[in-house]
Image (cartoon, rainbow, N blue to C red; front, side):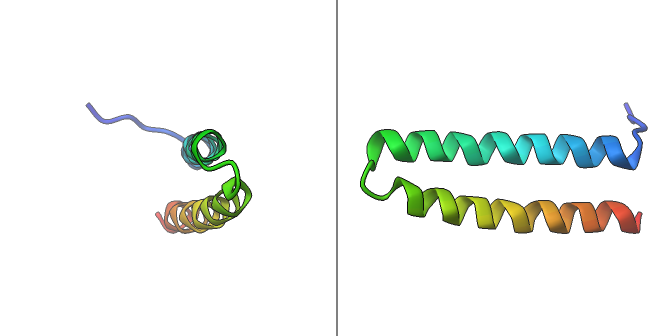
Length: 62
């Protein structure tokens, strides 16, 4: 089944999934590594930001 969505809907879904993953990593890091959770949170947010940027860049191309 092919789902036809607007570009803004695709971008919103990608952003929401990425936000959930970044927050989930932050919560897990805070539970198991309380001393280093802020560093892990920063790294996961930066990596997540680049992933969203490239996905949205690809969506704009198509």
